[in-house]
Length: 114
Length: 115
Image 1 (cartoon, rainbow over the protein chains, first blue to last red):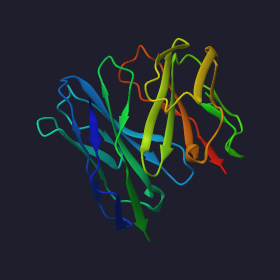
Image 2: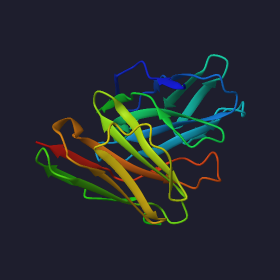
Image 3: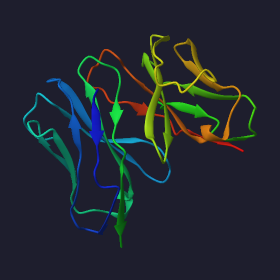
Image 4: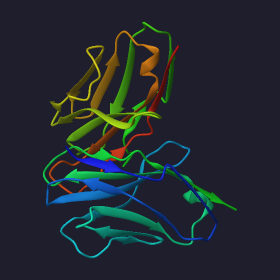
């Protein structure tokens, strides 16, 4: 069975700083997809960024980027120039290619302080 | 695109009552998922449908829980009888199944409180 682990239950940084959220996963599959979702206090789950395992280049979406280390089964999220609106729970998620099921980590609560 | 629509947004009920949660997926999305979110267990997949057919209900906690998808635009999750430990946020999500790397699109969730 696939598992996703987020080892940081909570993090807190000052506005404009850079912060990195950790995620590791366990799988014997070679082809899969990884996602980061954001859940602000409004409760809605919002896709932040996704990565295909077959791509060596790390995905980037504006201030959000990932460090994908396939051999280490690591998928960290870096938020640059953090903003107050980045305050949220962040979930790492994993899906095997061809499967439907998305497996989530336990989440990291990120607080951006003014 | 209105997104995934869930109702009600909040539900408070007494133990033993029947609860029905509703979901309208994004038009054209043929996979639908029900997740439950609690502090202790995080996000758990309860059941998912492909083309209105239940594919995997192994996450449904017990027989008190049932889910249906009578057509491509509507699904329900029912709890009967409800218990206080069912209190959680229930999310519905959908995705276009043939597009393998497409993400899940979530509704705003229903916060259920059973007293």
